[in-house]
Length: 417
Image 1 (cartoon, rainbow, N blue to C red):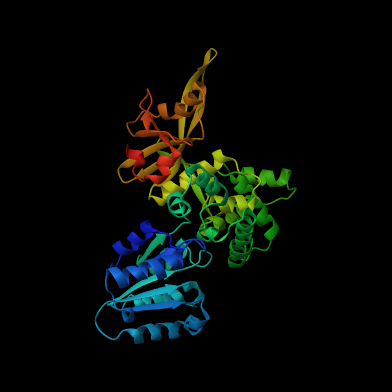
Image 2 (cartoon, rainbow, N blue to C red):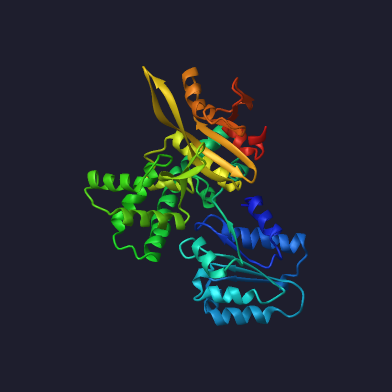
């Protein structure tokens, strides 16, 4: 089964020969190895006519390459394969399985005719490691599970049915190998427990796995809701009868973020032009993994839709915040200060979009509620409401753009109609 991952492939192609180590990072099983050893290698062979002898492949999780987990053996092997002055390409998978891999990769940078591409599992190969170890010579390409467009290119058929399935089971590529609901659910649940949780616990030497897993459940239950560490600590005390310090909870959240399982989204004071420290929001990297963590008991479409929109925006390269607007409204005989929320403030270069996610707006009151925060902003950047119903893009009487979810997910230029 072929799955196009054109956005990532095109990034690798654009970044060829730039003198940096190209680092494909992301959670396990999201398609990093497939991108490198199938899609990119085929590009080199078929589109660029690179001789196969000039493509050096090492998959460190394959027993065939076990000896190259030794850093000196790996370096010497790669060096021995370079026989002339033409360009060579090193494709190195699961690099975290090699001890002292940082010094080996830095050594490869001194070989002028070697272009280096590596993948690493999220639990061992994090953004913080990259920044620290490669001192500006690492070129990170963050990879995610399938977005809906990639998923639909394989699933096809009725859009509504595909959307319902995507909401429930998400976009992990291997989901297409399973035909029944129970098999899909078991795969995602086992993947979360036996791979992701185990990796994070082992990497960070977490002693109390039970309370860590309780936190994962709480975060999964509250996607898209404003969350503070203090509020979490109080919840543990009142519900779980478990006292966990705020520093410990904050550390656990950082572990999950560094492992690429969740993304922390800060609040931004739109009028004050400053970030607000707390509370913030968390979104899961994949809706199917989030649902599996909760045994598919909390699958409210409005929350999942918001999570999917957030993921789509960051996959398209936007920097995304939660918008906060302070307003004064007259109630009875006095003015009252209130805070309104914009689901997403999406920035990319000079572009900015204010976006609300609304599953449906069946009444005028609901439409006014969704538009209220957008109309309170007062600047000239585009204001958008995304609704689940499949509609033609339009503008309302206030100039707010209304976009159907289908158009947004399948058309990368939909925000600019």
